[in-house]
Length: 418
Image (cartoon, rainbow, N blue to C red):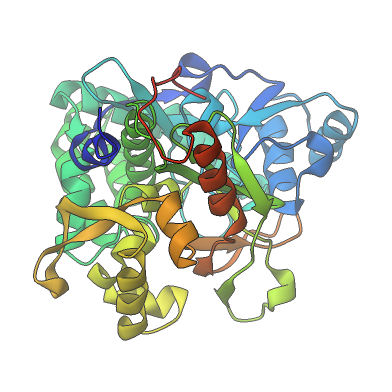
C-alpha cells in the first residue's frame, strides 16, 4: 500500500441509503444505554444541551414520566453513555441516540454500514437539548409514522445513492453540512413517488412530504451517515496520517487519525458563532456534534466556496469563504474528483486532512457548525465557523513519527467501529 491509498478511498467510496430503522433494532442501545456525540464523556461531565437531550430521551423511552424523574435517573448513575462513533454512527450536536430514535441506514456494498438519526428540524430539537412536550411529540411521530414509510420507500426504490446527491448538491449551492437546501429538495423529489405508494393514506403522505421539504436540514442525516461510512473505509485501508473523524461533546473536541488507535483531544473551542437575535456569546455551548465528519470527506467548511449563500447563516462573506477553502488546500492531500465547486471552474474540494501538513504549516482546519444554548432545554442559538485547536493534530503527527521511525508507513487496518 502507499500513503495515497486512504485518500483514494475518500475519493471513491460510496454510500447508499437503504433504510430508516429504530436505533434499538440496528445499533446496540437500550432504554438505559444511549449514544452521544464526540469523544467519550462521563455522565457527570455532560454539558447542558447534552443533559437536556438525555433527559428528553429518558422520557421519550418511558423510563421517566417527567424531566425531574429523568434527572434522578441520570444523576443517580442510571445511564450508560458511549460515543456514536463506537457504534458506526454519528449524531448531530448532542448526538443522543436512544432505542426509538429513527436512524438512516447507509451501506457501501461491501457489508459495511453506518447510521445517523433522522433530522428533526431547526431550532427547538432534542439534538440541541430542547426536550419539551412538542419536541417529544414530534419524535414520537417520526418514529411511529415517518420512519416506517421512509424505510418501506427506500426498500421499494432499491436505495438512494447519497454520495451522488452530495456531489450534485455542491453544483446547486450546498456544502452538505450546514447548507442542505438543494440536496433536501432533490432527496424529497426522489422520495415522493415511493412515499405516496407506501404511506397508508394520502393525508399521511402529504404530511411526510411536507415535513421533509419544510426542514432545510432533512438531507443532513443522510450526508452525515454517508460521510461516516466513507471516512471509516479510509481509516481502515492501511494509510497513516489521515483525519477520519472530528467530533465534539461540549467539553472536548477530538480527532481520529488513521494509523492510531486512540482519539486525540483538546478543549472544545467556541469559535465565532453568528448568534440568533437575543443571544450573546456567553449563551453558546462550545463545539458539539459528529457532523464535522462531513469536513473529513471534503464537504462542509472544505466546500464553502460552493455555497456562498451560507455566509448569511454562519457569518463572513463569499470572499472570506473562498479564503477558508484556499487555506484548507494547504493541509489536504488532494482535490476531490467528484465534489466539484462550480465557482472555481469545477475544481475539486480539498479533501484528506493530513496531520503532517497541519503540523508543518501551522494551519488548523476549520469547520462550520451549529451552536446550542449552554443550558438544558433551550435549543439552538446560532451557527458559525470554528477554527480547531492545533494540539490534537500535532500530537497525532508526533505519535505517527514515533511509530514509523521517522516516516509514515502503511499499517494493517483494525476493526470497524472503533
